[in-house]
Amino acid sequence: MAVTSSFPTGIQGRWGLVELVVTREDIRADASWRMHEARHAVIVHLGGPMKRLETEMDGITARPGPPAAGDIWVVPAGRRYASQASGGRIRYGVLYVEPEALAGLAGAEDSGIAPRFAHRDEFLYRGVERLAELIGQEDDLSGMLGASLGQALTAHLAQRYRTGDAGTGPRGPRLSERAQARLQERIHAHLGDRITLDDLAAIAGMSTHALLVAFRQAFGTTPAQYVIAQRLRRARWLLANTAQDITAIALETGFASHSHLTTAFRRHLGLAPRDFRRRWREDV
Image (cartoon, rainbow, N blue to C red; front, top):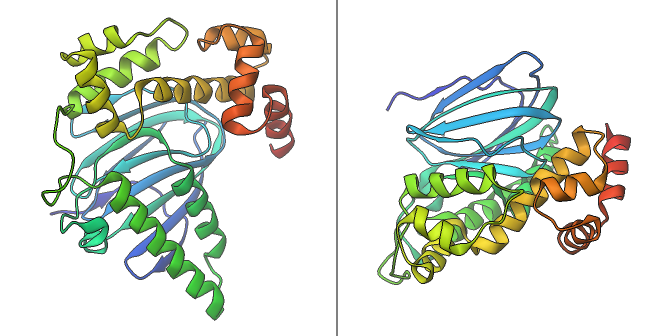
């Protein structure tokens, strides 16, 4: 397979079968990236404003809206990935993992993983952030820590994202990748509206019960938790990149009130929207 990538080269480190490249890029003019790798790749948005992002993987397009720090894209080995974006000065990491590193982990010989668009995975996010801090550190302890982190991230990918099973995985209804993309598109386009299981089941072409099973299998969470995560993701972006008041942001992202958004923010992120906005501006 011809291996191609148009991602600019940043600082990089390698620990066995795991490599991390961290890049800072100015995308005030439109930027585009392409990837076709023999390795699995996890793209992690580490910071900086994006106003627009559109991604495509093997002909399936996703427009999840601007990402927040910690959002990830999982690109399985052999898949063709392309994206277009505009915004400001951003920082992102691309974690590359050789497929053979996953083989035999999580009780399966299969080394394939499932794709993800604009997914939230705190373990991968924090792990990549920590691994980035070790790039360029040549002492023995940093080398051992980097190898341990790389192994932990690989095991996490195998456990949470692997495809297929060795005869022991759950059977039942499954969502095709196109059905997953349609569901994501619907949810992202209607975050401020009422979203029901019946609506999502109709899009997927299955019963609500089958959708609950298939959705968890595909996304690793329930439809309700996925919608909450996407609403909070959009709210974070609006808090960081606009001057809208918090009540307006709450209503735009599907929360009933300022207090409803604040409760969700504290439960999931550990701080209030006002504090999030203040900290983000201090960091910038």
